[in-house]
Every structure is written in C-alpha cells, then in structure tokens.
Image (cartoon, rainbow, N blue to C red; front, side, top):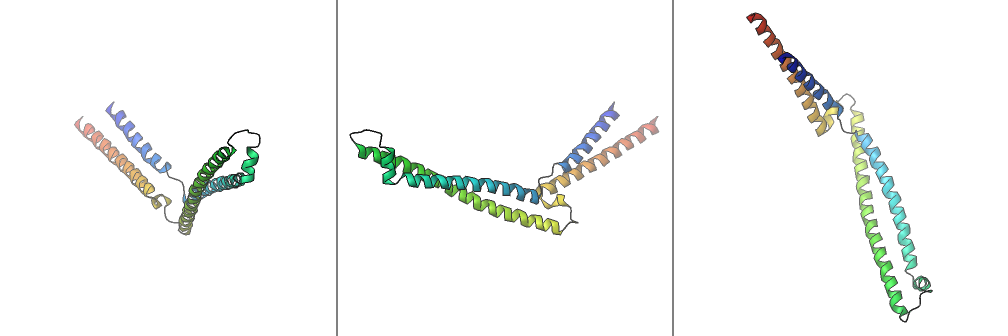
Length: 170
C-alpha cells in the first residue's frame, strides 16, 4: 500500500513539474498585438469624445442656448440661460478631463507597444536561447520544473533503495 502511495506521489510531482512549463505567460509579440488592440479602442473612444466636446462647444454658443430654451416660458430667462450654460460647461469639463486621461493612456500604450516590439525583436534575433528563461516568471517556472524532476529522481531512488533493503531482509 505504501508503494502505491509513493508512486502516486511521484506521479503527481511529475505532473506538477510538467504543468509548470505549460503555464507560460504570453510572448512579447502577443503582448504587442494585444496592446495594439487596446490602443485602437482608446483611439475610437478619443474620437467619440472629441466629437462630443465639439457638440458641446456648439451648444454653448449664446444663440444655441437661446434656441434650446425657446419653448420654455419664464419670468427670468437670464437665469435659465445661465443654468443651461453652467450645465453644458460642467459636461464639457468632464468630457475634457476624460479626454486628457485617454490621451495619457494613449501615450502609455504607445510606449508599451514600442517596448514589447523591441523585446519581440530581441527574442527573434536570438532563436537558440530558451524562451522560458527570458522572463522572471518563466525562470521561476523553469526552476520549479527542475525541482519537480529532482524530487521525482530522489523519490524513485528512495523507492528502489527501500525495495533493495526489503529483498535483502527477506
């Protein structure tokens, strides 16, 4: 029964060491592609937001504020116009703040893409080097896998030694 448990444990260690290699992170080329897609999304959002800011600029013109309140009767039309202007200004300021955030995200993504492409180029220039050891995580997984293989070898040796002792004692 102990022999089956030992073999099961060794098999589990072996599977763990093999799975460590399979859990590799994405390559720099895949990272660059993913970042380019994110950049396209950010650009589309920026374009939509710029269009909205232009619409708000147009709506903020005094004649357009006047036109938007034409059907509303009031004893204080100046206050209504001022309230509408404040509302549009607040909305425009919020859209401009979002636009600034998107512009900084755009710049960050461009830098990240350049870095990922440079790393992908470096990796393609050295095809003989193991790709597993290029990232820190990959290096740790390589060590973890080697540790699993070492444990497998030690466990197998211990089982063989134990079997040898039992045969000699019988």
